[in-house]
Length: 186
Image 1 (cartoon, rainbow, N blue to C red):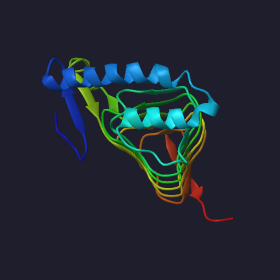
Image 2 (spheres, rainbow, N blue to C red):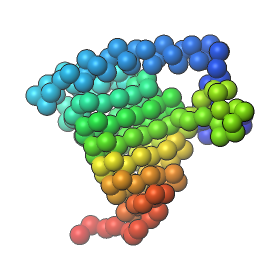
Image 3 (cartoon, one colour):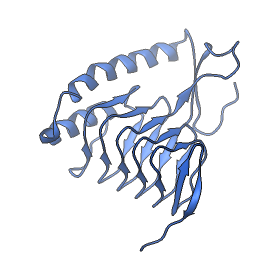
């Protein structure tokens, strides 16, 4: 299978697929603990998300459980990030959240999928990175597919399905998402 920048191919029954399963099992041990916490447990939430991602998080980081992830270790979170309830981050390829990002409830960031050809569908998993640049707002119920970058200061409207890059300083929406208009300071 040809690879593009940052693309990950994990074939079935390989050392890589066994490592992926171990990562999923680790995340499935940590996320139920995280998902029992409440709004008042911000420090413990931050600690557990840091353990899940393998990275320290700044004091302004906020996440409202529940939260779901494939493995967690491929998620990089900038400063002053807010992630609302019931979000799903499938991170076999990297997911990067820049500083000051707002993630609405029920958002899905899905880096991975399977080959489309029926004969190849069970051969493995193909994953592409997702980049959410600085000061982006992803509204409620958005799905972003692997290989997408959402540019700085942009907004993705509620319920959108993002399959292509969103330029900086724009409002995008729809299924599939398209640029609706440029945004500027009001």
